Length: 85
View 1 (tube, helix red, strand yellow):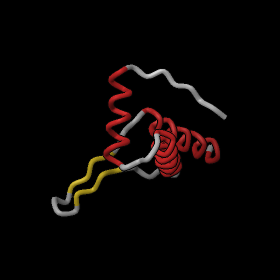
View 2 (tube, one colour; view 1 turned 90 degrees about the horizontal axis):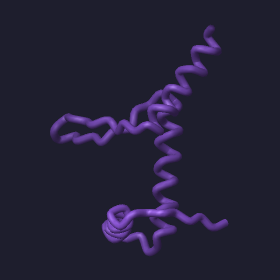
View 3 (spheres, one colour; view 1 turned 135 degrees about the vertical axis):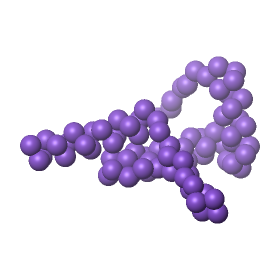
């Protein structure tokens, strides 16, 4: 199956820069990896877990918040309430 996307010049430059930074040989490879990461993050959010960047040496962390992950987390909470209710 083929998927066509419309990206503005800034988005395309960002995509190409990310492809270069990650060593992805093709845009398809980059997108496949991004989808794998997103699927994992959504699954973890749906389980009630947070996705975070952890800096062990500074003992800090920063939680990733996106509308998609918030939706997955809320959906889990709503389903749990329905079962408990």
